[in-house]
Length: 336
Image (cartoon, rainbow, N blue to C red; front, side, top):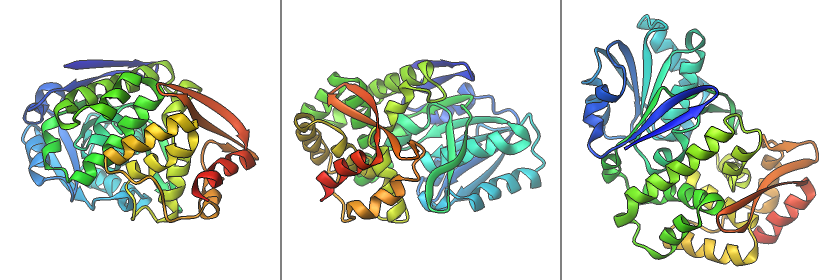
């Protein structure tokens, strides 16, 4: 399946096909020098498979986890390209989850003011969300995604077979972003999550999530309005990640918790039920006071105002700009 994404900043295809990893050269232009970047949590065979499709591959492996999404690893990627004499005609291929994709995209945007970047996501979260849309970033001074750029990939290759090696917790982690997609734009997808077997409907779940993200990105690439709805649950999520140094909770788990205060009571009950079905946490040990300070540094905060995404009805999201004190009250109501 080919899902085209067309934006003002560039157009590219998302290729969704089981078994496609071994044919990466069919989908991407790899007849050149290629920096293939993966992490220690991804089966090494995936990067080797991609490298076998390249004319001149250089494969590097970074440490898995959010802690690698920093300026030191960013510098390491740039250093590798300089040492191997990469030019503007060469490219980077990310093979892994959102951390690898974010790092590679940002490095590609900066090296020689921009070289080609391809993304091969291998986690549920990156396949349904972070690999699409052109947002690239690193964490800095303890704050999530605070340094980055909009830099869309030249192409995205999604092979659901790569999910077979994921631990159950990582599957659940990615499905939290699927829940987010359903909450803001697809009530039928939410019904699937609520009532159907997840494993037997996984390809459908990925496809529907991709079409939601495609629609949003095509209509608002630079986050002027509509794309902000993709931040549903993320203000509190990023605060949780900052509070626990991005180690205790996975990103999707934080998003699941972050969505709960931002919806009406009847929607909240159904949301919690689905999160529990997916073995996702619905509360955190951190107090509201501990998290709200980090929320003040969120990109969506401006002075004493903050723009948040609120869901009154499943499938429909609403942007609300409110005093920070009002947002704090919502968080305190849920977390106590």
